[in-house]
Image 1 (cartoon, rainbow, N blue to C red):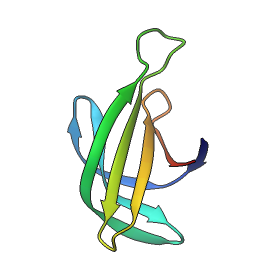
Image 2 (cartoon, rainbow, N blue to C red):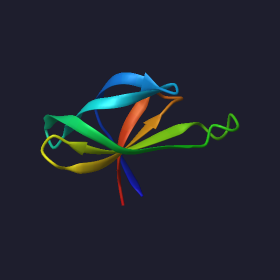
Image 3 (tube, one colour):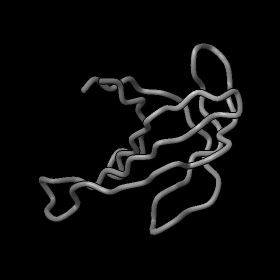
Length: 80
């Protein structure tokens, strides 16, 4: 798995995690039209920070997996 930091504008919050509304991908802002899946990882101990993953579809049909790192308030694009 490879992570690349990215700019994300979030909308509402769900269970303490921001929901992505727009992502800056390939030098342009793209609206998130649908959150296909969401899951959490970690958060049980201080050495295991909480991460929230989102599989989203953009308005132009791209499907992207995003990771939100709660400790650093940072977004990343996940590629495999």
